[in-house]
Length: 310
Image (cartoon, rainbow, N blue to C red):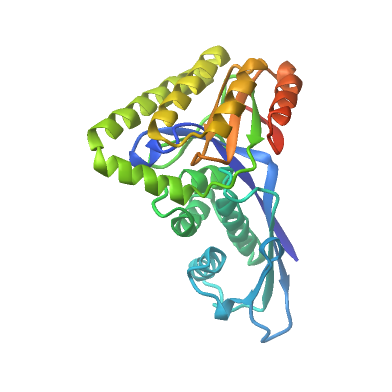
């Protein structure tokens, strides 16, 4: 038996604009993980995929490539020179809420690729994991930037520009982030597609918004590397204002953002596709309890506190 894990992720700065070539910053979230476990079966049993979270059980040989887990399994087996239908049971499980902006699909696929490589005794470097997982991201998101698979594959804070290798970097000081789950499913594919339609209709306006978000990302990287959390909090707020202009915020998210700031957060914004999913609040480590309590009282389904470390 072989088991591998992959973390969730959040985008700190730059969602949506990143699809159009602007930089973004994302970090792994180890408080929630996806797991893949591979067990050998009897000879000629073939490969079975199990995903109890979604009541999925099927033979790999029967699975369509429209199923992301099947596609990634086949890509990994092919790339590693393994049999196309090994006598394995592959079971996946995730603690990461689906359609919530935490990279649930990419994390499942990354854990799966990592488990296949480990079970075959072949190393799977981050660049390879990211490349293979990106194929499944197209099924989940339509026109993804690649930031989810890169962050989850490298398991580090990254500076990301579409089409360029991700650049891992380290904060000057640890950052404490409260992640509030709105409880509203929000498939990223839908919001990305809607923003694309608006961009096509009014390209100049949206190009200006994307460029402004890119400038915020540049300033945020400098603030993170210099340990200026007050400035980073202000940049969270500026980024949120532009996301609202893009039309991807919502009344429930706006409420959680305002509640977090009123409770003492340095800044707060949506993270991911928007409309639902998660709000992230930058907080002082000593001030997590009141912000968490305020978010839960305002309707958040749960709050995860993560620390982004050097």
